[in-house]
Length: 103
Ligand SMILES: [Zn+2]
Image 1 (cartoon, helix red, strand yellow):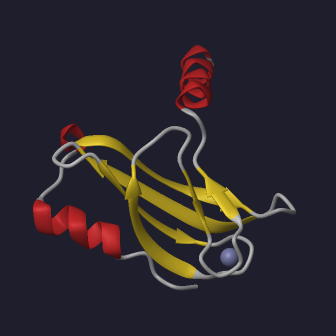
Image 2 (cartoon, helix red, strand yellow; image 1 turned 90 degrees about the vertical axis):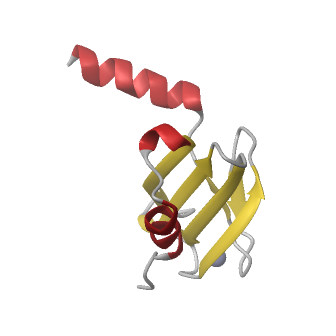
């Protein structure tokens, strides 16, 4: 599996803390068979508000790093196989958080 390094390097080089981020996530992503085969990391620094996304496509294993306009819902298309890799909506995450707080 290729290594996800680009965003990590960016964070270290610019000394980015959680409070400097509009959004930051690093999660496992599922392919069309619902198997967790890929990974996606998204970082949106407050400084420029642009999304940096790094992914390993769950469908074909392709690794890439892209910069894009930050918008919700956010997704990237695998540049190799066009599989759509998305991050969950804020609302879903909030729900999940509420659930885990209750539990
Ligand atoms: Zn792909």
